[in-house]
Length: 186
Image (cartoon, rainbow, N blue to C red; front, side):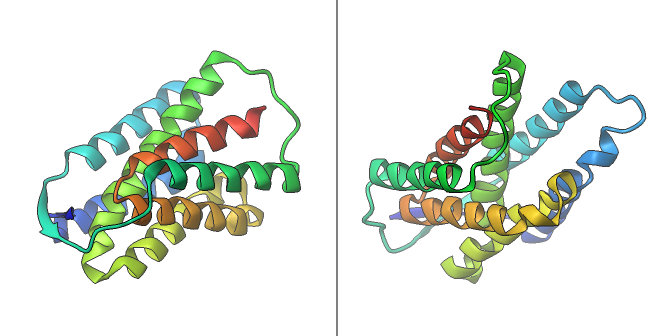
């Protein structure tokens, strides 16, 4: 199987650091009268653009044997179970803006963490790529939701990173993340 790894590793580390910093600084970016929807949309589009346009080179890796549909079902099931067991927030009005921004956030975060960050860490081995992308994913959510969310987002990050490893694609975790974000508002 052919996999892709990032080229220009030093520049990738800088882009990874800047992307994570912007996600951590979301509460600060939304202060002083900033329009939340426009600010967050711009942030997520920037992350998505970095992640999908960064130059990559092909490498040959051992093929994965798990079917993407099965990985998707297992990942979504984990989030449904988490929602049922954990309860979550009270249902919110399902406004189109909430669904659209939550979906954009999910796709952008998956492109960034399971495509860009995962590929940046992949030369250190699959374990580093899975653990590193999951931990960074969890940490960037602390400033938005608080420390109590760290174990939940770490578990979510591991499910999504496992999906990336199992399928070789960031698209299955992206679909799972979109559905998980929808579960939060249902």
